[in-house]
Image (cartoon, rainbow, N blue to C red; front, top):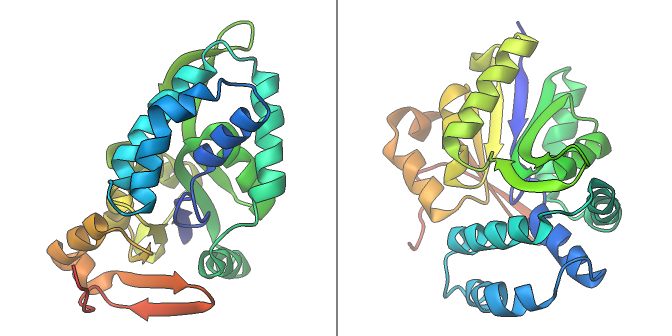
Length: 241
């Protein structure tokens, strides 16, 4: 058995959301109607930026609009925009997480992505960073290679737990010696299974869950990256909220 590292992508490695970037590119290239943004998402996004709205609520609304906008779209069009996203935005990552990926690879650990982002985006990021294997949200295609509107989601904690267990079985992983990296409550089940959980710029909900779990309170490490400074903290660190 061997050690491994399991990474979320959005907010953990990538500084924003790959799905958001893909959606923006679909709008830019006029693949989807720009009215969807203005009527459904713009106000929620602006409220979140001003910290007047909840990011998870915004992401749920975005995912629904994103999925609806892709129904019937040819896979080739989706993949063209995907390539543009990774080419232009794929380096906008947290250096602390990028360095941890490199460190794990140098140690000979298997490195996995378990992400709620669309699988075709996760695939490109996995290739870019030399990842062992990955799991993302599946967007199902019909016999003509067009998107059906059906997805197999990977952004909730239960789905991520199933994915982790599948990778553990496939690659014969020793979880007690393994690491998990995430930023939201959707990553909490990964944290509970490994010996070394690491929260990267955690949400208040995730930090609270870590503090309320006696084991995680002792084993978890908190990393906060701001500008060119990386802070290494414990769950008991003082916060103002």
